[in-house]
Length: 306
Image (cartoon, rainbow, N blue to C red; front, side, top):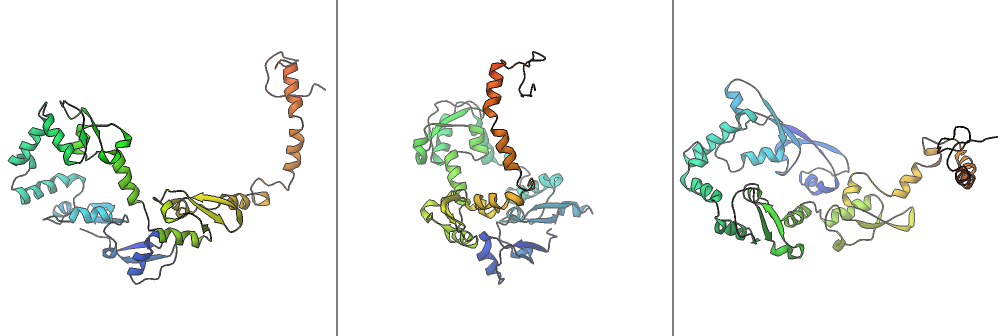
């Protein structure tokens, strides 16, 4: 049972259309309190709910989770209940009874048969068919257990050569071509380029890179800082969102009297005098064969004899 009623939403560069769809005025970093049911289904904002099974026992157990996980646990389900770790199995049993009439999916004949076939030794034809269903070309000729590594080629990434994966991870963890996963993740992390341009504009940077240069939020984009127009720099959208900007500006803000180590401008003269004796130090070490004239022990620092 959902107990969170309202949540705070911060105006960021990637949620401007959403904020405006709520009838609110978007202003960078401004925080609005909205009804929890107005969140997008994929929102990662944290909410709290109560375990319905504990409530039946007269106990209130609070379950913290992300909003999208709360939505997914209810979507297309015949029962709308929330379960804590202790009662997760109870919910699975109840769902299985409603959907299949048995307490465990393993007891369903067709599912049981699939499990038996999946672990049957030497059934390479079945394994090959599973790879083909995922648009992958299996090269391995024999199969013995879920711990076996299976070699395959992905038609979409033939240039990456032969890949390998444990059959158990392939079948039960839905793993496959890692490069396809990278592409999928890259698309998920890709913002609309107009939003990227808007953020550079807010920082008063002149964006040089084009839409074709932008692959995802980690893509390095070239720009010019208005205070350092002779330097073409590059940064990613994610770095800008996190607050990073022109590194030259950052150095200037933290140099001279703005630095916590500032000593009134004396350090430059001190460093100059110390650097003048670098050659003398090296020559002295060589002449003494790196041994102290008093102790005859090896040393790393020069001290004056007179």
